[in-house]
Amino acid sequence: MPIGTTITEYIIEEQRRIQNVSGDFTALINDVVIACKAISSTVRYGSLVGVLGVADTENIQGETQKKLDIISNNLFIKRNEWAGHVAAMASEEMDDVYHLPNQYPRGKYLLVFDPLDGSSNTDVNGAVGTIFSILRRPEGARGEPTTRDFLQPGDRQVCAGYALYGPSSMMVLTTGHGVNGFTLDQRIGEYILTNPNMQIPENTHDFAINSAYMRFWDPPVRRYIDECLAGKDGPRGKDFNMRWAGAMIADVHRVLCQGGVFLYPIDRKLRSKHQEGKLRLLYEANPMSFIIEQAGGLATTGTERIMALPPAGLHQRCSVIMGSKNEVERIIAYHLEDQ
Ligand code: P6P
Image (tube, rainbow, N blue to C red; front, side):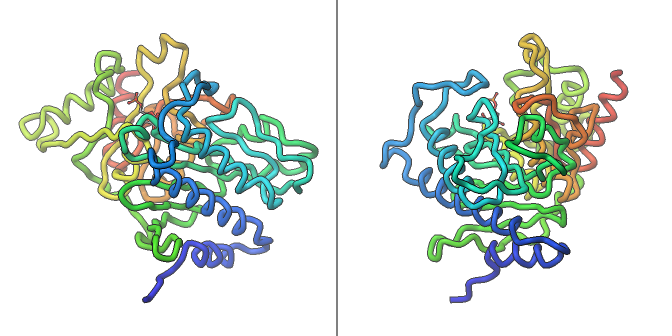
């Protein structure tokens, strides 16, 4: 049975392209991959092993945590804390920086992640996944990493990826040299390269937004969606399709594969709660933006490029509009006209 290119082979080939790397980076990504395999397996068993439903805790976002949120977070921590590749970690499910147990060596990378994105889908067997981002620890930093060490703009990411636990389990990865997709071959327990050099179509007829919030949208977003809804008789001269999976990872994966635009924009309701958006910058918007840009798309708040934003806090939120270049450029133009 031919196996194909495993994700480990791909990572090592990538390492050979980069001069003077110690292999730490490769080993870290490998540990992240194993963590995702473990989460994928746990998610698959669902109610058979009693991991569905809510825990009796809340995260810093004030969101009730699902049992799988906590299980996935702990799997990611356990898999990545011991090997000496990371100096510390941060997660949607933990209020502060996670400092490694004293007995473990500290490495030169910082790992930020959303262990289970879309967890509102867990109890209805919907798509969920893991999003992660790898940063370098700032030059010259000494002692235990602080929150400030993590507050780096998305352009400083050295790797970003996600694992989508859908009908098949896929990983999508970028280290800054394009985007590659891998599918988990359950027969051998390896992610195999199935989608090399993923590129987002520049034009599209798909958009993903939660239309329940339409009454709160800013004018540029409302204008863009209204024009899509007007279809071929409207200003766009073509019909559009709407999708909303309730999990950023699933909606953005569709955009990556088929073209489209994903929008979770700031709106009046979020402003009333003094929030700059729904999605979190460090472990949702930045890693997904890195992937989208590497695949030829654009990722913006509407007025600013997401990966240029200077983070002010671990759990900072931001407006998110990302996908096919021509569509995102149109939405940016509508925001500029509205200023
Ligand atoms: P809403 C999942 O909780 C998440 O953070 C994203 O993955 C998803 O796109 C969004 O929230 C869904 O939000 O308001 O539609 O439930």
